[in-house]
Image (cartoon, rainbow, N blue to C red; front, side, top):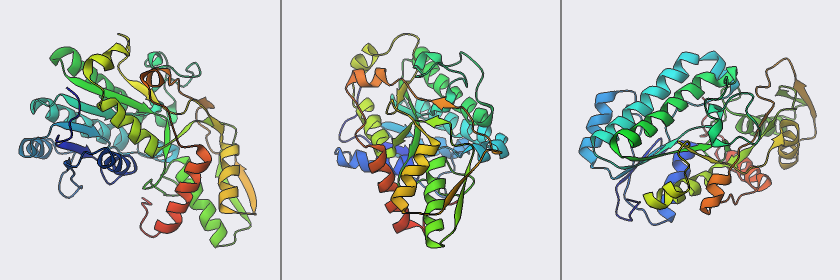
Length: 325
């Protein structure tokens, strides 16, 4: 079974960066029957609320985009919240989908699931082959359990639950908090404020030497719909027996120092950049092997420069209402 135009599709986390991009992409592809619920309408941490929601809405397909997310600071400061809340959210949704006899589900993970010292580029088969990066292990453990829950459903009950592991994401509707966000939204906000306030210098966490891969959220949305539109037989023909998930990224990385330079040029900031190497760098290099999904026929379309410009301009227009929590 694959997606159909009249399917009732539930997108959890529809107000977030990934969820909002996915809703936009689904509508563009002709799917108009999209089920959404905000936090006041549906508490994803409450099992009974989730079960009742699924029972009353007669859902056909599910995209799990809801999660508690954050950067190194947040993961290090709120470890219990990251592992508990993420496990509860995904467990409640996945099991509710199963109990409602829904066969089509996409679980959104993260590239932090891979070992800290994984061979580069990181192939899907490297999952659980070594210790995790300590600065985000809590979030990673929750996402690994989600992958395995979907895999277990497929093995035990014959479901078609698919897991997608995106690289570092960015784009409109991200969290632009100065400490709790990921690197790109944090830098976008800092550079914008530095320009507006005419600051003489701007501080960046870490040495600037680590290299990261970045994917615009609109490309992730297209990859998600692309995978869910593929029928089960064709999908499984690309998946080796030892693979429980699929990487999605660009296959290219860039140093944080180079990233800072691009955003600096976009913002036209002319002050001094100070790298604070007393702050943790995290993994020094992380880029995904995306050969599985490219062999299926998908490839990224948005360049990093275009995507960063899009994100910076979005923040300028939406700075007063952008998430900063």
